[in-house]
Image (tube, rainbow, N blue to C red):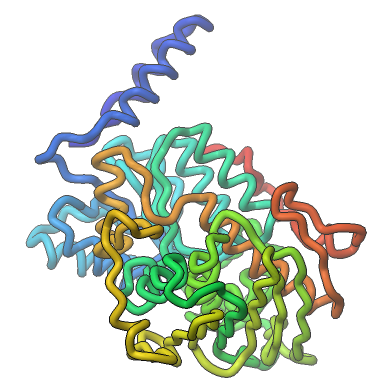
Length: 431
């Protein structure tokens, strides 16, 4: 049973200033109260591409404590596919489908939303959902640094549960790497090597008619207007265009760079220096870097090198190294005792490993507890990647202050910490 039933009617009935203040306190108390053990968390799933359906929707349908009530996408065909999945899973025909995500936000019987859209929608949609009283599970990353700050403020003000959609902290290999490093089994960490896939170049295309059953204007949303072309909105193509994403660095990097920063206690910190070089497509639809190498320096002179050509992570310390050479590959280390190290619950300097990010979210919503990926985590992780992109775009080193969130003495780089949104979309847009 939804915990927020009837809140809109109640709030509308309170007309005095003191009454509104009381209503706000009551609503916050209800939001933060643990749910009934037997209640299901009702979900609306927004964004039904490959990841939205094949990873997030599929996972939530397997959790008995969750119940999907509605699905939403700007592609009609995706709506129908997702609705069929939901109805088959539950053995009924109750699932509603929508083109406009705001219809999901207006439903009082939906407790939380699952956002699996392209990156340029992540923060705006999450903020609008939070202001509508919905808990939020949202894919990574942010689109730019300034949006991360807006996200943190909006989630705190709304008092809702926000979980970033990254699985690594619940994946054995990456949890173990971070655990061993944080607990000193490598000695003093000195260097981290991260490899990420190379970017893909998609050629320019001519403008084409917008297909029937596709709301292209809503797909663009806050992104700059550009004419419709056939492949731009595909599963991977948009990830290589600045208007919608940050390339492989913010896609794959969100996984392995997070493990790196957790390993050195920098998940809420960040680098001090960023020096990146990248190769960028010419006369192509793709605009993000294809080949790249970025050097990050953290406090205590820890260096992280991120380069294209793989999907691995290696952490080197004064007493040995450990690595996962490819995505979810078996771990290797400089000596067997590193991999065999026992770390007790009492001494562990890393949080307990959640079963999955999806289960973690549902439990956080039910118990009103902090999930494994908070807005702060997503912001600081995304910031590290955005700074790498800015350094590559400008071709020079950046000096960054993690505490103030500012780039030193570089107005051109500072201007790239944010970007305008296309009217009428703003952070004040009503749900």
